[in-house]
Image (cartoon, rainbow, N blue to C red; front, top):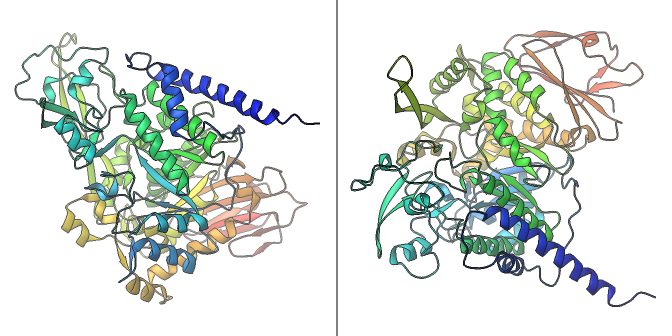
Amino acid sequence: MLNPNDDLQLQQQLQQQLQQRVAQQLSTIYADIKLSVSIDALAAELISTMGLTEQLHTPTPQINHWSEKDTILITYGDSILNQDEKPLQTLHRFLQDYCAETINSVHILPFFPYSSDDGFSVIDYASVNEALGDWHDIKQIAQSYHLMSDLVINHCSSRSKWFDNFIRGEGTGYDYFYTAATYSLSNAAVSTNTDKSDNSDENYDIEAVVRPRTSPLFRSTQTASGEQQVWCTFSHDQVDLDFTNPKVLINFVSIIRQYLDNGVKIFRLDAIAFLWKKAGTPCINLPETHEMVRLLRTLIEHARPDAVIITETNIPNKENLTYFGNGNEAHCIYNFALPPLLVNTLITGNCQYLKQWMMSMPPAQNGTAYFNFIASHDGIGLRPAEGLLSEQEINQLVTTMQAFGGEISWRTVATETTETKNNASSQTKEQRKPYELNITLYDALQGTTAGRDEWGHLRFICAHTIMFALEGIPGIYIHSLLGTSNDYKKLEHTSHNRAINRHRWQLNSLTEQLNDPESQHSRSLHDINHLIRLRTGQPAFHPNATQFTLQLGEQLFGFWRQSMDRSQSIFCISNISDTPLTLPLASVNLISSDCWYDLITGDTIDDINQILTLTPYQTLWLSNR
């Protein structure tokens, strides 16, 4: 007979194990910080805040919470507008009307009250922006789709209540922000220059700090206790939070709990790489940041075992890979190197760099996956291409995108200029480097380095055919799904480069375009939906299925996928040039005992030794089932 106390004893045992694990992670994070509470007390408060004191789940390691049936749509809550209807309701209806058989997950970009950066300067994390809808609308979408939400964790709005209280010196948030004073106490001294009268960045030892923007790092803010220099990684409206104060962590755990209760399954940790700062370091990718990701994962998956964490780390590829940890940090990482490499491949007609990168990428172990995308609300990041594309290739990419109507966002880097032959002395200068290409994907692929041509739409579809077949979970931006072009009016109105790729459609205008089978928008939606429908039925396209890069020259890009049970193989081969190319099937080594056909066209392969001709930007998905 079962002892009725067995379940209670098991829960108590699990509680003790969780308490020990969280305390250990906190000890690592706050090893150099003098806390006003004990680590054990802080661990207990976090567990309680997450609602894990009475009932918790035990996550199973190395479980894949995804399959080939998953495709994530990336969209703003108001990307489509309809008169007299809440935008979130309009979005929901659009998904049901046009994507019912293709999209099963949706990433709604920050849907909270905000002051700038189209949502990424959050005023209130606990509310839905009234201009979009309310929590009921969010829950309705979450009932139909796997819902992905941003946790804008590095910074918040300078117009938030928290920052108002910081200025006033009292109330929640008065001690939530990272300042020059905090930096000077982080186990290193501020610059020996003691004249702080001009409050400029040069007066602080920040030469090693990695910057994604060209604006000054500090903003001067007059507070009740005097003038403070507040750290701003991105803009002066986006003030960085101070996670050396555990009250900030507790508040964000409370926010996570609220999001879980409202149906969020997938958490995108925005700009997480910049979370922890320490003097004398680059203030990016620090060990404390990695441990913080592990801590948040521990708490989240004990509350919802099938929840997924995706880290948004727009950094060089090798650094990005570290956010997998040992299978205990992010479940998924953005494949940030893919967009610049794939666009470069298609505008140059040369897949050399893409192949080199593919062959260097380790397969994601079970329980982790790559999040593949080639366009998003942001531009095409160039930092992930560092070390993968030469400076000449990057400059050519920049020039080509400018010729196609794109804008370029820049960042500041410090360079050391030698003053003497023996390097006895040097001086640091700042240099601008391209950080991001701001352009819609449809316009980015309207030609090659030689200029615009007639192959734009096919080139655009080819990019998606490659992306959908790659190892990982595909994400598609709504303006790629709809084949949207650059929005120059919004760019001019906002003077914000990223606005060029953040068009807002009026539903009646969009519907008119989608009803016209000859429009670029209708063709894009039709062609991409067709590819997604095909993809969802192929076990070989499981995000963790085997992938092997083929060697077919510089103008044919190919790779082989095999299902996890080895029953299906798919050879994915694309002509990435603007001229017809021949493919001797003998070079692919199809198994003679299998029957092969192209999933995209439905054509069968009668002779595995025949020579096929691929038209410009045509892709084959050769499957044995």
